[in-house]
Length: 261
Ligand code: HEC
Ligand code: HEC
Ligand code: HEC
Ligand code: HEC
Ligand code: HEC
Ligand code: HEC
Image (cartoon, rainbow, N blue to C red; front, side, top):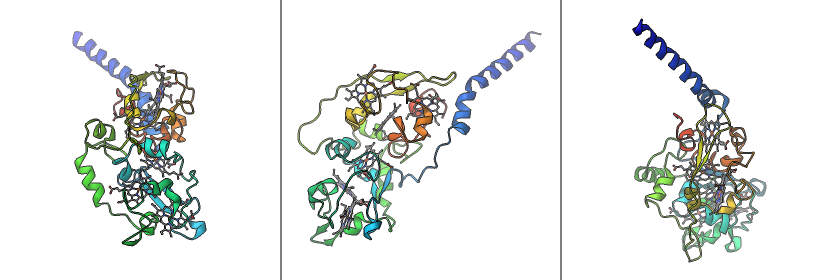
């Protein structure tokens, strides 16, 4: 009898557990229709074709991993005013002149190749949508850095934290003083779903406050109505970055540490 009742008890415990885990599982496997992921070396690539095809030049594929090893997001998306929406920045190349703005701030023959150098024209290095890039470099990088499950499969947060990469945080001198706001725990508005975490520190290391405040998020915990997975699937909220550039939504556990996936 005693044997039976403990067996029943564990049966009910199991039933209870699966009911509790059901929302998490069904979300992960069904309701959350995540877009297919590109291969790790292509993750974070952005096709820039605002005017290229129209002007009969090959469009540009901009690779984020190549650049984020050397610069934080802040350099391009705050200092140089590149938009966080593809084909939104009014880049005018003027046959590679670009007048020291946008790409040619660095593609100047000193920090990196210029459109026209001693070695001739480098147009096709940027106007590269018709060629397959050399991925040897990616695999050499991947081998050196801590791993992650999705996206580039590189744990970028850890790589930076451990000093394995040292991206420049500004093109002008002077280092920023970090504010160091503590990690927020955002309790999910659905029974059985473990809370999400938001580490301000990690984000501050890569970004400027103005990338998120006040447009995307209120400066008060749990007041932003748009913080929902349904919006993230549309590329809004956290997924402005966590869909194509920073680790993707597939990685539930990074944001919901108590989830199983
Ligand atoms: C450092 C990267 C880079 C290099 C090098 C480069 N371009 Fe561009 N180019 C761009 C980007 C980015 C655009 C914007 C593409 C778009 O919006 O469709 C662009 C756009 C263009 C356009 C479209 C019209 C315009 O002026 O914006 C032409 C034409 C062009 N480039 C020609 C050239 C030629 C010729 C060279 C070589 C002498 C060259 N580019 C070198 C990045 C580059
Ligand atoms: C060297 C410059 C540079 C760095 C560094 C950089 N980006 Fe970008 N990013 C760009 C450019 C250029 C575009 C395309 C903009 C356009 O087409 O108007 C872009 C586009 C994006 C987009 C839009 C993607 C899409 O498909 O719509 C997001 C989101 C983004 N970047 C986030 C980030 C994050 C997060 C980081 C840091 C981890 C970062 N970027 C680092 C230059 C950069
Ligand atoms: C903040 C500086 C900076 C800006 C802005 C920048 N780049 Fe770069 N880019 C670099 C540096 C530095 C390298 C060399 C990276 C290396 O060798 O690891 C590089 C490398 C590249 C490469 C070679 C990639 C490879 O596989 O080796 C391409 C193509 C490129 N950039 C395109 C662009 C385009 C297009 C833009 C503008 C939309 C742009 N970059 C804006 C600094 C920049
Ligand atoms: C990547 C996006 C992002 C960046 C960058 C960012 N924040 Fe936040 N911040 C958030 C989110 C998300 C919340 C919570 C909003 C909510 O729950 O409605 C938040 C909340 C806050 C809060 C309220 C905390 C509380 O306990 O109520 C403060 C203060 C804040 N941020 C300041 C800053 C400052 C200062 C910076 C720059 C140093 C910054 N944030 C950079 C996303 C960001
Ligand atoms: C403007 C871009 C941006 C937005 C918006 C953003 N993040 Fe991030 N987040 C990043 C970048 C960049 C990293 C560094 C790791 C990477 O690139 O994969 C990061 C890292 C993280 C990490 C740390 C992972 C680790 O390995 O330690 C967590 C957790 C996270 N983000 C959660 C969130 C949540 C939750 C939101 C929305 C409330 C959010 N992020 C919004 C850009 C962004
Ligand atoms: C980039 C961070 C991030 C990732 C990755 C992420 N979530 Fe979320 N999730 C959040 C945030 C933030 C909330 C809202 C917390 C709140 O209500 O303030 C949330 C809420 C939820 C909710 C509650 C319903 C809702 O939309 O508010 C469910 C269910 C959920 N997440 C499931 C998942 C599953 C399953 C995965 C993996 C496939 C996942 N999440 C990946 C950040 C993330």
